[in-house]
Length: 201
Image (cartoon, rainbow, N blue to C red):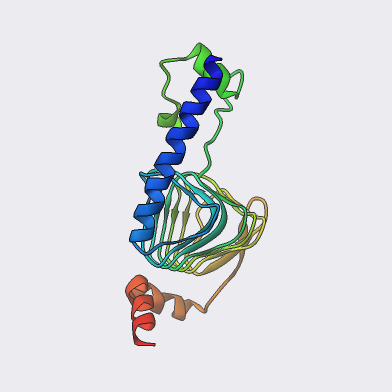
């Protein structure tokens, strides 16, 4: 009975919180799909689109980015990013040094422990990044501006700007542009440049 009451309380509080987050995001100009779940602590910029995706608190999503579906558990996503279906970004990582990796044992035997303090930092994703369907981006990773991550990849380390990576774990495949073009793009404020293209077209 106690478990039933606790679960009902959690569900009601969760739905109320999501409804408030929905209203705030809608007023800010965010387009929301039917299955979008947003935590109140999330910061989603206008002109973004969230499909059937769960966005945790403290996540930041930049102007004009879209996410079709998946879980954004932690991290910062830049402007104009294209993120496919069933993508996971910044999922919680289990402590492989413990006897058991189940959080049930952590809560029972180490109630004073703060496992979040032992987690790697949230991932950082630059502007104009394309992440294919089924990709997992682990914590502690930085993906540079204009990078492409092939579908089904697991990103375990940093990705250079304007590079194409893929595989498990994700490895460098090729650059998107010649070196000179990359240098010219690096000197530009990419976010401002993309905004100016939209406003003048």
